[in-house]
Image 1 (cartoon, rainbow, N blue to C red):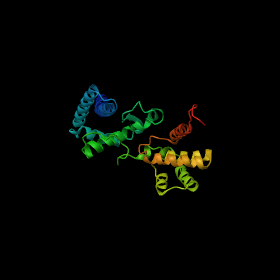
Image 2 (image 1 turned 45 degrees about the vertical axis):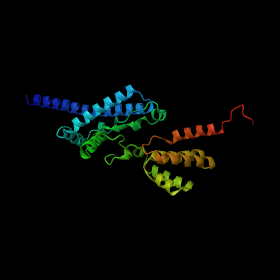
Image 3 (image 1 turned 60 degrees about the vertical axis):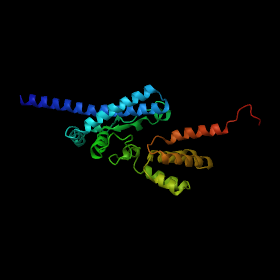
Image 4 (image 1 turned 30 degrees about the vertical axis):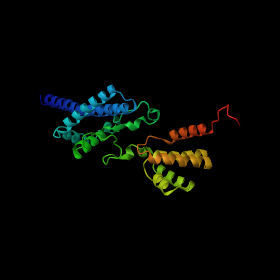
Length: 253
């Protein structure tokens, strides 16, 4: 009998937790939908899109307010979940941002940058809605003090000393400005820095390869979200070079 009661209580607790987490899933879904129709309203304006955007905004606002007004339920649940040592919570399972299907770079190469780990998702909710008392979730989770950016920029996937060795190699090979050195030594996009070393290992250092690396670093410095890999930039650079060197057949030599 005692075992039966314990199993019933456990089942009830799990069901209750699922229902609470579903509220957060609804919240982030409304966030993405609002971002989507905000994008559409700017790029494809129409009365119907504006109406839809405003309607979703109200639903998003209501859902946020419902969660914020019950910290004894939702904040308590978040704190309880964050104490658990469940490895499934460390996977990129939550689609946090609007996935723009009109952006081929994002779809083909950097789709994962829209995702956040379940534990980090709960941390963002706690930090923004309860600690800071924000009206809505932040558009971008990267850069928040509760997020370890190394978990999202590929640094933790690298072999020991791989990043440091790449930094040393690049700085010994290429003459860089203070700004370029600061970026190369930072951990903003360690994978890209390691890829630069691999690119130089493969192509050698010459006028053209140095020109590309300088161009790539200029873009990577401003890429705070980690959307671009060196491979993507190499493709873009090559296309630009082809366009610049193209001459129509009917043009006089």
